Length: 224
Figure (tube, one colour):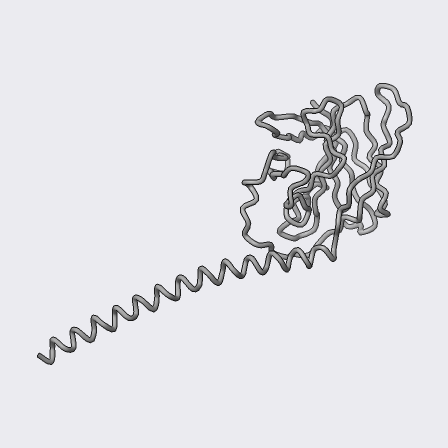
């Protein structure tokens, strides 16, 4: 009888332990989920103090002819290198409408619609107004991204690019290939000049200049 009681007590103890472990696992999952949500909100507050890319307003263009650069002025806040700061585990891919690929850098990163709440350099590469999407002939698709060593520094290796390197935009299931035709820097003064041939379909990338906190680097690419 005593042995039977001992066995029953052991079974009860094991059952209680199993229930306790299950509760711990469920609590841990719930805690992690809430932690990510809170951390995501904190990131919004933290990054908003670092950078805000405003809408870009186009100034009247001068008349230019074929094969002449266009000087398009856009209003933008400073793009900074940011420190190594983690971001929460959100699956942004379901919001992506296309991808930027740079074979030389082994980089592939998605982008959202311009008006999507996740179209933000603190989460993804950002499509900047007044961008034209890649399917517009002679349009200019403008993307900004962080450099530095953060988990959102998707453009940290852009400084390795050279003239004639290839970039690819995938949009609406179609690949558009671009070749770098110009690389230059511009002061971080809120007035960014994008110089391109207005008769070419272009892709413009913007990021902080490596090793220079006073300038931004602009990469002008043309449809291959």
